Image 1 (cartoon, rainbow, N blue to C red):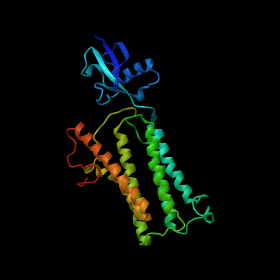
Image 2: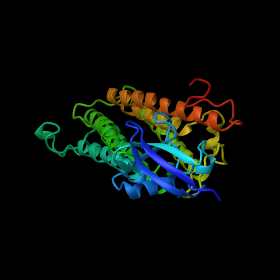
Image 3: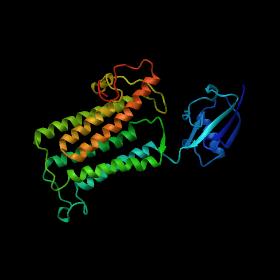
Image 4: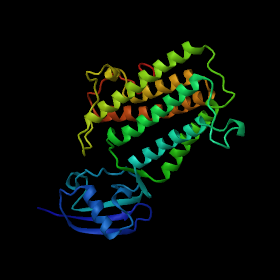
Length: 308
C-alpha cells in the first residue's frame, strides 16, 4: 500500500507550516487536521480550513486523501478560521437574551419607564398574551437547540456571536419597550384581530416544530448524511411539496401573526428584516439541494410557494 507525503502551506504567505510523512491513503482531512494540530497546538481542528487551492473552498472533514486530485506528495493550504464556539452555545446565548430582556420590560423593572410604573402591569390583556407568545417562542427555540437540532458543523467563528446577539437582543428590547409601554394602545380591530393573530402564531409554531422534527429524523445521530426532505404523515410537513425550507416559511408566519397581534411597528420591522435574511438562507439551501440531488423535486420554491 502506497503512502502519501503531505505538506501544508500557509494560504496567504505560501510558507511551509507542516510536513507529514507516511500518511495512510484512507486518511481523512479530519485526521490530517488532527496531525497538523499536534505540531501547531494553537490551531485546533475546528479552527482549520484545509484547501487544495489558496483561494478555493474548504475541504470537508470526511474527504479521503486518496480520493482527492493530488499526487503521492499532496500539497494543501491552511487558513486560520479564528477562534471557534459551538453552535449549541451560540444558539443558547442568542435565544436566552431575548427571553430575559423581554421579561424585564414586561415586569417594568426600574430605570426603563418612569419610576411610578416600576413593577406595574398593563391593563391590556393583549400585552400579557404577547409576553406569553414571545416567551413560548424562545423557550421552544432553547429546547429545540438542546434536544432536537443536529448540526452538520460543530462550531462557528466566535466573532459571529456578538453580531447575532446584537441582532436578537437589540430587536427584543426595541419590541418589548413599545409593547409593554404604559401608553401602548391595543390593535384597532380589538379581540377579533388578536384572536386571529394568535391562531396564525400557534399554527406556525406547531408547523415550525414539525419541520424541525422531520429534518432531525433525516440525519442519524453523529452523522452528516444529507437527504432530500419529503412530507411525512404529519400534515404540517406537507408544505415540503412546494417549499425547500418550510421551517423559514412557518417562522415568517409566526412573526406575521405576532405583528398583527401587537400592531407594533418595531415588530413589523423585525419581521421584515428576518424575512430578508431567511430568504437569503433559503435560496442558498435551495441551490445546494439542486446541485447535490439530481432528482430534487422541481416544483419547490425556496421559501414561498410559487413566489420566492
